[in-house]
Length: 99
Picture (tube, rainbow, N blue to C red):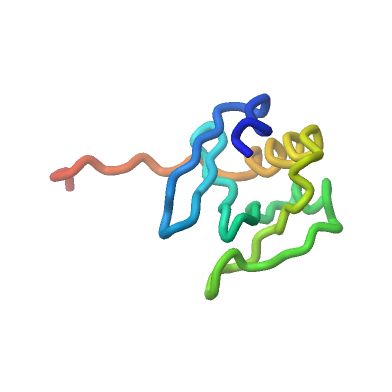
């Protein structure tokens, strides 16, 4: 999936609790859980793909878009870029020992 999204920007992923968090240019926009792609819900994303089902990526989580058509590279890139435009930049981490 990271290769599919490469034209969108810098795609990275981090293992989290047995699954993966997916980032574009430093913004976490998706989770990969049980080999399924869950993308955060945004207004732009909903406008681009209102037909996408919504589901929680794990028990107790809020709903995300369940993005299943990962073979349509152009749509997925446009969808992810639109989603990330709406998401805030992550807050800088505090250095250890700083108060």
